[in-house]
Amino acid sequence: MVRPPIRTELRLLLNGRPLTLADVGPDETLLDFLRLRQALRGTKEGCAEGDCGACTVLVGRLSPDGLVYESVNACIRFLGSLDACHVVTVEHLKRRDGHLHPVQQALVDTHGSQCGFCTPGIVMSLYGLWLRRPDASETEIEQSLQGNLCRCTGYQSIVRAARSLSDYGEPAHDALIVERAAVEAKLRAMADGSRVVVGTGRARLMVPADVDDLAAILEEEPSATLVAGATDVGLWVTKFMREIGPVVFIGHLAALQHVSEAGEVVSLGAGVTYSQAMTALGARIPALAPLIGRIGGEQVRNMGTLGGNVANGSPIGDTPPPLIALGASVVLRRGAERRVLPLEDFFIAYGKQDRRPGEFVERLDVPLPPPGSRFAVHKVTKRRDEDITAALGAFYLELAADGTVAALRIAYGGMAATPKRAAAVEARLVGRAWTEASVEAAIPAFEEDFSPLTDMRASAAYRMLVAKNLLRRFYAESQGGQAPLTVSRSAA
Image (tube, rainbow, N blue to C red):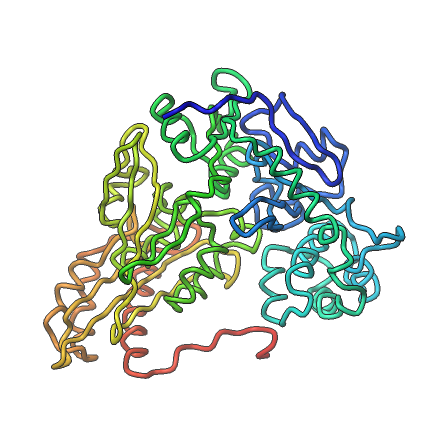
């Protein structure tokens, strides 16, 4: 392999200005850069963990479909991940005649702001929605605001503003649309095929030229921290003050965002974001779309990746249990060598995965449920949106012609030190009639499979009861029982 040229500075667009930066730390956040180094203080720090949305900005990135703008949390987005990107802050919004932008004017007219602290982030979230869906539905409005918290105004006035955006202007006249071709050309010129290396020693960041270059870097630097979306690693810095250098940023690698389907298997690159997965998987496995829609806010879903959720090995990661229940495999790469593991075998113990030095998650292969099978996933949290899992159950079932259980995979998160199958429960059910009596007879086997912990999210007893009840729910739904209704503003 020919080693790519090395460039020693980052290149990006900030609002209307091109920047070249040679003094970027591997753990410098976009929020600190904007506020402390650029004096752009409309972007606020609220939670510093990607929950409140006060720091929301738009990031334009090059994709196979062209230039795409997405809302992100600047508080946990690292500056080093923004090479060849366009960062848009609230200061950049205005009409061409200098008056307030349509999103800003709508919030003013509907009294969508009181103290104003959270307002810039709300403006940017609604701006992103307005650009792609000026006629957004109530559900789409709610989803776009999931990641924005407001302590004083209440959300009705903000939603009214979102509903009225089309009355104030059309995206076709907005600067990001009018100037899109010119901005895309500038970003493509910045993305020159180089490996970016900024800094020295542990205070060093690297941006690979491509996936082969990533493999080469990790062979040389097996202890480097890999960062895709930073929705986890960002908190290592902002909450735990950990040193993470040297860092390798991989969120830009198009080959890791590839989605394909062959032989009833969907293959997803490790860099596929939750937002991309909602489209790619949600259309083929409908039960996954509502789950992905509850992972963080839209800003988090635009940043976080499936590969990152798997690679960090968290016992409360939302995607491993359903992927395990579906029989997914993980493709690991080191240099030019690849190996394939059943995903459930990737998780060894708390904080320990079957990943060798220099090896990285390259792809996930997810079998599609065959006709006649049943698949469901249910997440239990203290609040519905933007909350971390207390317990999550995923269920895959195939019945034989005589009504007995031919295949069954039950996987849970939040019940053990790793995402884990309920092997004893499965053994009690496979080969038996799929009946309420059989399910109840298998329920005591949960005590063999799990010994959950008590923590701030739930007690051990609560988790055990929830796990059992989720299996009962799955059985009831398989018999045509109605699932509990999802409460929303539109249904109230």
